[in-house]
Amino acid sequence: MRATSTAVAACLVVSALSEAAAKPEPTPLEWLLKADKTRTHVRPRAKAKVWLVDRRKPLAGISIDRDQTFARLRDAGKARVRVVIEGQSVEVAAFVAIADLWQVATRPALVHPDRRIALRATTPETPGVHLDPGAPVTVVRRSKSAKKIGVDHGVISASGFVASTAVGIDFAPTPAAKVQAADFRVGATALRDRPGGPIVARLSPAKDEQHVAVRRLAVSKNHALVAYDGLWATAVGWIPVAELEPGGRGGFGFGSGSGGSSRIRLLRGTVLRDSKAGTVVGVVTRTSSFRKVSSDGNWKLIEAPTEVGDLRLWASDERMALSDD
Figure (cartoon, rainbow, N blue to C red):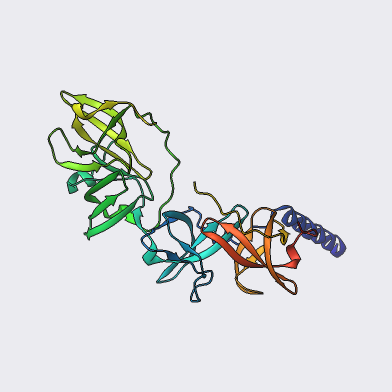
C-alpha cells in the first residue's frame, strides 16, 4: 500500500514539473507591471533625467526631452516613479522624477469655464474641451470637487474647471476612437458655449498653417457647432457659419544604435543589469543582435536602442547565443 502511495506521489510530482516546464517563464518585468496597465506622461519642459536604480546617479547622456508616455510599475518612492522604457527588442525598468510628470486626465473628462457644466454628465456634442485619458493639463487652483486647469495643446487652448477626480499622474489608455472626417476648415477662432455665449476654447493653426480642419456637428441660423480632434483632446463649440470654409485634412521611432562591427546576439529572456552582477533592470523581449561595447570575463556591456536613446546594459554569457554576428 505504501509503495502504491509513493508511486502515485511520484507521478504527481513529475506531472507538476512537466506542466511547469510547459508554461513560458515570465520575464523579470512582467510581475512588476500593474494589472490595469496604467501609464504616466513625462513632460518636456526640461530634459527629464533617467535612473536605472533609485538613489544612484542618473544615466549620463540620457534624458527625455519630448512628450512621452510610459507604462507604470509598482515601484515608487516619494520623489520618483518607475516606468518601462521600450525598445525594438528590450524592455528596461527605469526611474523618472515625479516633478517631471504631467498632471493628466485620468479618465475622459470635460473642461468648461462653468464649474456646474464641467461636473455634470455630458455628450460628445457638449461645448468645451473633451479630454482623453493621458491629456496633459496645468492645475491652476484646487478644490474638493473641481480643479481650475489650463489646457495648451498647440492648436487647442482653454481654461476652465474639471472634476478633481479626473486629474492625476496615472491613466489607463483607452482604445483609439475611429477617426471621423473633417470636411471643413477655419482660421484662428474662438469656440463658444452657445451662439454669442462665453468662450470655451480657442483654436490656433499650427506654425506655417493658415487653417484648422474641423467637423461640423450642427447648424443653427448663422452659427455652426464644430469639433476639432486633437491628439489628446477634442474641442467643441459654436462659431459663425461665415468662418467655415469647405475642405478638410490634407512615430516615434527607435534609434538604430551606434555603428561598429562588434555585435553579439542575445536570446529572448536574457536579463539585463545596470552593472556586472548588479541589479536586474531589463529583459530582451526578442532574440536580437546588439552592439557589444566591451567585455569583462563572462560579462558583456551592450548597447540597446530604446525610445529614450541607446542604453548601455550588462548581460551574462549564460543567455547568449553561440554565434556572434
